[in-house]
Structures are given as C-alpha cells and as structure tokens.
Length: 280
Ligand code: NAD
Image (cartoon, rainbow, N blue to C red; front, side):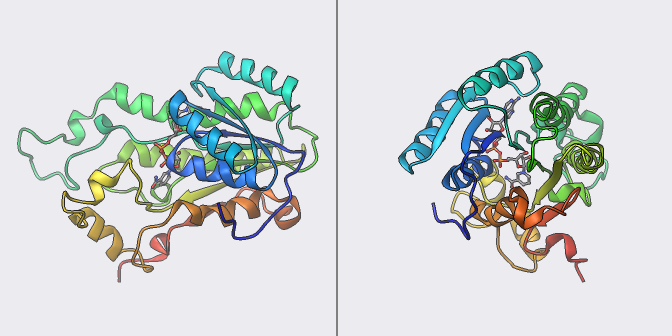
C-alpha cells in the first residue's frame, strides 16, 4: 500500500473495529504501514484473516479477533489479551457500522404507495433498534473498554466513523442517518469529556465510496451507473465516487499527535464537496 505521507507509529497499539471492512481494512493497513501494531476487531473470521495476512505480507504486525462490538465482556477479554501481548491501546478507530435494509424505505418520497413498496410505516422497529445499537452503542462500548486504559497516556487518540448523512439526512435511510448524527454528536461529547485526560476524539465523515456493499445500488448489470448513482454524482462537485485510500491522509493527520495535537472534537467530511454543495 502506498501512503500519501508517512508518520511514525512505532511502539503504538491500535484497535480498529470493523477493520475487516471495505474502508476499515484500508485504515488498518495504513496504520500498520506506519509501524503500529494493529488489532482488527470484526465479525467474519475469514475476512479478518485476509486483512491480517495482507498486513503480515506487507511487513506489519496485526492480530485479528472475531467479536461483537456490542458485547462488553468479549471486548474486555480481548483487551486483556492485547495487554499481555502488546500493552494498552493508544489508538482506537471505531469503524464497525452500517445500514439495515429493513430500516430503509423503497422510495424517496411518500406518495401513497404501491403495496409492494417498503414505506416509512413499514420500517421494522427491531431493525431500527439494531441499526442504532450497532452504530451508536457499537462506538460507545468499545470506547468504554479501550479508553479506560488510555487516560493520561500521552498522545492517545480516538477516531469515530460518521457519515455524510449525519450532516443532512439522505433519502430512504432515516435510521442510519439518525444513528450517524448521533455518532458525530457523541464525538464532540467525548472530545470535551476526555479533554483533561489527554485523549483526543475526532471523526471522519466519508461521502460516497463505491464498495462491494453498495455496488448493487450504484451500478446496474451492465456496470452502468443507476439513477441513484447519477443523482449522487450530480450533487458531488468532484463528479466521482471516492476511493477508500482517500481516507488515509485524514486518518494519518488525525492520529499523529505532532500534526493535530490541537484538533479535538471535529468531524471531517471526505466527500468530494458533496456536503458543501447546495445543488444550485
Ligand atoms: P463494511 O460493511 O465493508 O464493513 C463493516 C465492518 O463492520 C466489517 O468489518 C464488519 O465485520 C464490522 N461489523 C459489523 N457489525 C459488527 C459487530 N456487531 N461487531 C463487530 N464488528 C462488526 O463497511 P464499510 O463500507 O467499510 O464501512 C465502515 C464504516 O464506515 C461504517 O461505520 C460505515 O457506516 C461507515 N461509512 C461507510 C461509507 C461507505 O460508502 N462505504 C460511507 C460513510 C460511512
């Protein structure tokens, strides 16, 4: 992996939740490339192993753990294992998160729908709760577990992953938008709360990245952009989707104490100008 610039994370331990995902894996590999020991906490063992192997092949140090970020006891157990191997954590990236299809409307507007459409009235409460828990509590619980040992540790840093939809909700995904707004809000709360304890807390808000997860929504069978993809691009001044590697510069800036020691409680949009554009 090519880094936009190099920072020195030798001797530091990083935990990346969601570190096996499309974006999380790139963040994990970048941290390892800078010398951090990286613990990848995610769901699917096979995907975790793939990222751990990639890091090893690239000369870095990594360990993988299949875990539910909502299970505090599992996380405490991992913390103990990490303490034994590498010592307390210096960097926490809260990357686990995502949308839920049962918390998504079929259409952008309510127009007294066809029967097969999933309207706002059909959204499943359980799916909405699950989504909120994954994105919000899935940020809060790992922070409780790992930040407890970061207090008064020089240069400790937490980076949450919010989203574009936190600034202005996107159509169809009211719960995911609300949950990410909560993550942005919580980022500011944590930044203030830990400001006397030496932990900086910031967030990245990625815009639209063409990933395996949303490929079906953005590309048709011929590989052409769908109507939604065209609409997104028409609202993105840069007129293209982002590449996961384009998060790396912001990641390195925000985790490097020398580069960002006075930056605390911000949410950085990485969106090709989407959030700045009014559409006119
Ligand atoms: P992804 O689906 O590829 O990866 C999600 C990761 O979260 C996986 O590693 C998965 O194992 C992990 N995960 C899910 N539930 C978990 C749980 N209960 N416990 C532990 N791990 C769990 O998603 P991605 O595209 O890499 O997204 C990463 C983050 O960025 C998410 O928070 C997502 O909401 C956010 N985001 C993504 C985009 C995008 O365009 N892909 C845009 C904005 C924000």
